[in-house]
Length: 418
Image 1 (spheres, helix red, strand yellow):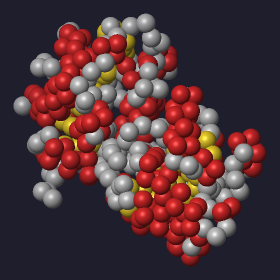
Image 2 (cartoon, rainbow, N blue to C red):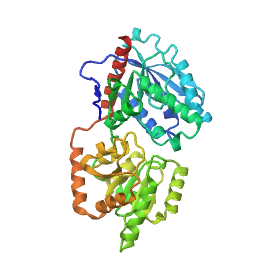
Image 3 (cartoon, rainbow, N blue to C red):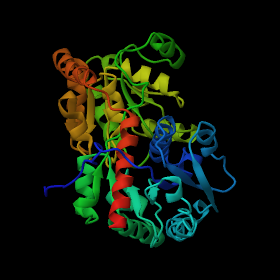
């Protein structure tokens, strides 16, 4: 691997505030883009709770949708303006291209009065993929997902989609700074998009506060309400093409068929899925694979309930074909639960010695990993102790993420001024 330079933002010196044009449209449709919406929501909450002198925001919003920025403004976040864009989602893949042109118009005049208010300059920040084409502002882009490029047969099937993703890759390559959540993502950006390593900033994400060691007293109530088994593995996330459910179900079927006691086969709780359609699709997939007797589906859960179910499990299983952030795995480890994950993206570096990493699409190895975690108490205790020891380390917070992101803004402004 080539050396990746200057990944860590410099946060030692006092920061000057920045005027930030930020695209918060993913927060208006969180069910469509939950990863991006979660990132933006936590980041904006951190900005709101720890204001910085001279900092202000211009919000890019979708028309005819609730405005999430009102809540932040009511709590003191300085909002210098709002830009409302028409819905482009109805255009499907072509919307990726149209967005880039609309966003360029949205940034016109966004920096007016910023320096008079104490800002060091103005930047444009995008986490949702759409970036202004030929922006007049320095662009800070956050890369959270590689699925459009790693799984093109699913996410780039049409000519419009392929063109849109090529355009997005070009803008990512040209961004003043590219924020990535992991070293694996940094290397992928350097290799896949030919991003100059000097412009890549590593800003790891943080687990939400609900995720901590030990099942709460509510676990028994949840177990009864959701008909959970006494002993179970857990997966948390959505049912989409990024996940390797076909391999997971094949591994579960093999373990059940090989077990002398069918009732002792591993059970897995598929928790925290999306809406009813997502849950139904996941149930149908399990039924087609013949493992519906080993699977427990839950409705969408609150963060507290989801954290409780994960903390009370034997282990967290995360089969994936493409993964950008590893956020679900990081949150599971924050509850001191061992993890089985696929060897994709940042998952190996996040799991480390607190779990088992297997190649994607390898049902035999995944079955062996599940068998070991389910029946081998010695291995389970060893992995659990490693996971638990990591929870005693200083905990990263979203305030840390916000501070380092502000340092990236400042670096982008300095580079533009230079």
